[in-house]
Image 1: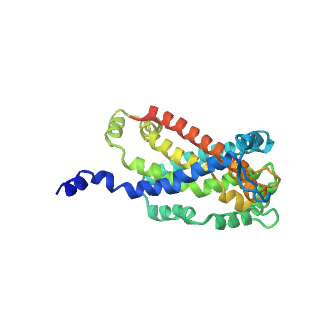
Image 2: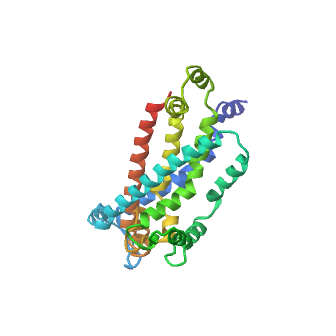
Image 3: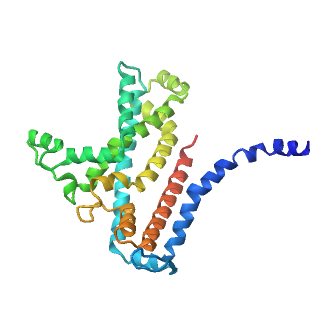
Length: 292
C-alpha cells in the first residue's frame, strides 16, 4: 500500500524521466563531449591516441584568419536571411489572414519548400544559378540586364545563399505569425474603427505591437537555426569559391573531415555554441520588452 502511494505521489516525476534521460543522452552529452575534445590534441592522421592539450586548440583557432572571416560571414548570412524572412513572413501572414478565393491552395504551396530535402534544394538552385544555362541568368538576359555569376563569384555567393534560405524558410515564419494573428482579440480593432483609424495606423499601433512577441519568437527560432546552417551551403558551394562562403559550421567540417584535426574543429563548434547562446539570450531579453 505504501509502495502504491509512493508511485502515485511521484507520478509527475516518474513519467517525464524517460524523456529527460533521452534529452540528456542525445543533447547534453554531445555538447559535453565536444567541449572535452576541444581541450585535446587529437589528429586522425597522426597515428597517436588523444592527449590533453589544454587551450592550445583555442589558441590555434584564434590565430587562424579564416576563423574571424567565418564569424563575419555567419552573422552576415544570418542577419540578412532572417531579416528578409521576418519582413516577408509578416507580409504574407497578413495577406493569408484575410479571406479570399484560393487561400488554402496558397497555404499548401507555401509548405512545399519546407518538405524538400536540403540536397534536392541545393541541386535545384544550382541549376537556377548556373552562369551559362541557369534560369535566372536567362531572365536577366531577356530583360537586357547583365548576367551574374551567382554562387560562382565571391561577391555574390553569400547573397545567393541568402536567397535560397529565404525561399526555404520564409513559410515557417509565415505560419508562426499567422498563428499569432489568429489569436488576436477583436476589441482593439473595433475601437480603432470607431475612432476612424486608417489601415496603416491600425497596423502600426495595434497589430504590430500585439504580434511583436510572436515575430521575435519566430526570429529566435529561425536565427538560431540559420547560425548553424550547414547542409544548403555545403551542398551548393562547399564553402567556395575559395573561402567566400565558409561559415563556422563549414570551417568546423573542414577542420575535422578534411584536415582531420578534431581538437580545433571542436573548438570552433564551442565558439559557435557560445555565439548561438549569447544571441538567443539577447533576443529573448528584447522579446520580454514587447510582452503585454
